[in-house]
Amino acid sequence: MTDDNTDRRTVSTRDRTRRSFLSTVGAGVVGGLAAMGAARAVPDDAPAIDAPGDQSWQMVWRDEFDGSIDDAWTHETGGGCGENRRHKSTCPWGNEEEQYYTAGDNAFVEDGSLVIEAREETAPNGVNEYTSGRLKTQGAHTMQYGRLDVRATFPEGQGLWPAIWMLGGYGWPDDGEIDVAEFLGHNTDTIHATVHGPGYSGADGINTSHTDAGTDFSQSAHTYSIVWQPDRIDWYVDGTHFHDVTRSEVEDAGNQWVFDHEFFFLLNVAVGGSWPGYPDASTEFPQRMTVDYVRQFEAVESTPTTTTTEEPTTTPTPEVDPIDGRVPQDLDGDGLYEDVSGNDKLDFPDVNALFQHTDSPAVQDHVDAYDFSGDGVVDSQDVLALFESV
Image (cartoon, rainbow, N blue to C red; front, side, top):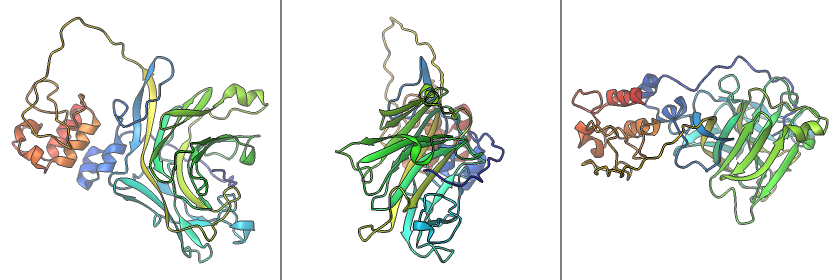
């Protein structure tokens, strides 16, 4: 998602991998719980993508959009200059785009997903004829190396141009750009992946297209991933590898490899532009890009496994009710069923599950099993007690 704007600068960054759980509970925001902390492993619903070497993945940041938009994201606002610069603006987004990005009216959480909605309507500036949304984590959260998963459903229609991408933040194109996935709404079976840098920016970016004739990427959610290492970047759709760019490839062409510093995330839906063309009579509005989650992982050394000749023991089924169809486990045999999510380990999904079900019969009918604070009831104090044990 190339921009021509060269005035972007990075303010000081801060580690946002851990936020106050007390404030999360106080506000009743489940989504903040998901974005707050580093989970210990890859979620069960994530694509199977190998970590480099003998390493394994560890989640270090995520936003599941379960409650509201996390405050790591900010809205960029303003109108594009339009086809042939007809709106007489400075083209802040480049590409002669037609939309005006609003300060939040077009981006919101609904049914556990972030929604970015493009609409045909007069923009707040009274000039642009379309509105949309553009969010970024600049100044709040960045990534350097590792794995990024974004699960999203793209909008369809001539002239629609959603993107999942990353910028370095100190002056494009010298700071680099990584396009995790771009989509043109008139070509619904194809995903585009690109990097931009000095000497290979704009139309000269290093890119490829992934086409699946049996898939319409606007009709269902798919997981778009990159694995970023110091000397290469690899792209995946639903765990299937389809593109890579290496340092040696870039440098052998006489260019500079600029993917060796922190990048921030961007999510947006452009309307029109020099690449996708512009809406026509066939384009229907409103159109939505929905994002189910953004998850970041680091590669860490794997813990060696040992084998045993002992006969496996069978854990008896606890006399408690299933939660969301899964039977919890008492992992340490103390009579408290801390594995609330039923995935055979103690992690943040268990805290999230308890947080969502403290008032449900499955919990309240078995207070002894979930009274982690020992005060005779199941409430937010038990959620905090379980959180502290993770």
